[in-house]
Image 1 (cartoon, rainbow, N blue to C red):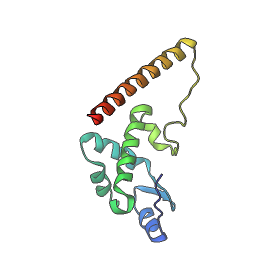
Image 2: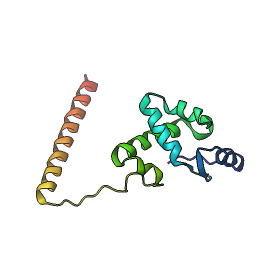
Image 3: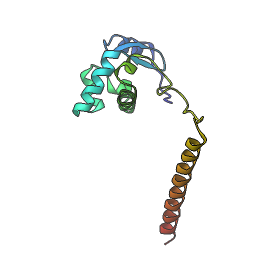
Image 4: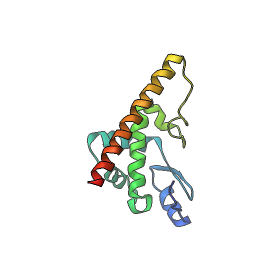
Length: 135
């Protein structure tokens, strides 16, 4: 979570941009058209920084990592849920906490086996890393 706070002048500057629908001390809400355009331009190869600059947004004000994170989140949302998901404001991004209920015991077993395999691989990697440091 960002610790940045916008003052009144910064909020006014951001709200005056046609790509921003609203802004508070803590958060900027971008309009649907800008999100869609940003996703398409990113897929064409433009960087998030270029996208925000072309939209007339001050990178120093918005934050270069904030711009990158926004575009990456929008691209992910677009891939997972489609273009309509960009028009809905969701601060929880992808529907909240992942579901831990399984439809069958077989699904639960499959999930837990995959988790165990992942953790074993992680432990093996860490053991190798520790052994290299000890050398």
